[in-house]
Amino acid sequence: MKSVALYHRSIRRFKPIPVDVATLEAVAQATSSSEFLQSFTMIHITDATLRAKVAKISGSAALNQPNGALFIFVIDTGRDIRLIAPGSDHHHFTNWNAFLAGAFDVTLAAQNVLAAAERAGLGGVMLGSILNDPQQMIDLLHLPRYTFPLLGLMVGVPDEDPQAKPRLPHAVVVGENTYPAADPAAIAAYDHAVAAYYAHRDTGAREESFYSLIQRHLTADQHHRDEIGAILKAQGFDLPQG
Image 1 (tube, rainbow, N blue to C red):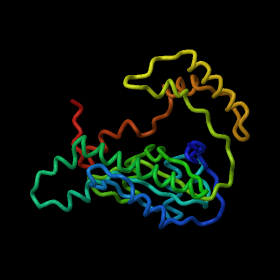
Image 2: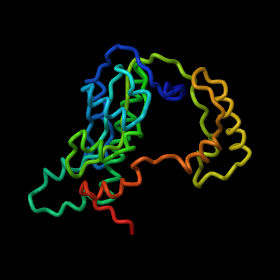
Image 3: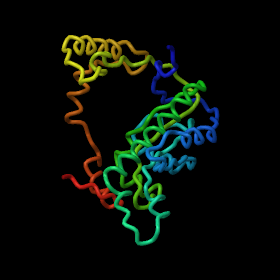
């Protein structure tokens, strides 16, 4: 089976050609939803000043251009809470199960939009970097309680043609009936493949490997991400640690 999804690449430069935003938004809403609660909100950023502020938080090169459509996907249990009878105990909409269900809904919707865009010949890039400053994102988007911004997504007509990144070996990631066995030789071979990719890619070639990416992550700047727990509590989520 051949699928365009097997050739996914992150696209960060787009041509000044508008995309069918209405269809992409409809695709997001048609996505599978945990318990059919549809616990997400999708915000299309069209204001240039607001987009520049999001770009500053993200630091992504994809946002430092006027082209492409920008969406922010938000975990949203607040809409459901507003619909229940006044005075009801809404713990089932603020606990770990509700939060994870919202995270599933957001992630599936964003991926569904990107997949639909790629099938239509467009490209895009996920922006987990909006979490560099979650509280500022909440303030910028005027998000109410019981919501949390989880993912950004840029979609547009590609203005670049990057090589696809090599992925971890199938046997390392996929197990049958149990966790896959460790395979140091396969990981070592993959490390060499990643190094070759970075050394020979058309743009931004550099000395890098999978091992070095993991090692650097130990000391990477997490920006304001360590504050996420406190921010979620302030947003009304009840997520005890034990």
